[in-house]
Image (cartoon, rainbow, N blue to C red; front, side):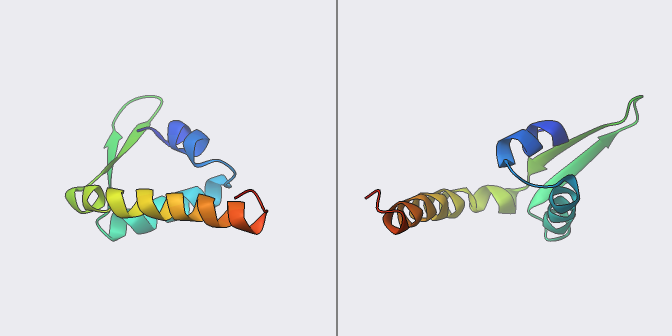
Length: 76
């Protein structure tokens, strides 16, 4: 996935914060960064095998967070 698409999907985040998070995830072996020698430069991000292993956990954590926020707002 390219940076712009990631930014749209993540939502309200500054470019600086997203870039820093992607670098941290790359260093931790969760995300793979592929840079292409093109003009203009193109960079794509993908999940590593370790990142794929986290998908179920992240999905469940997101579900829990939505439910928790709904409870706080009296929507459940």
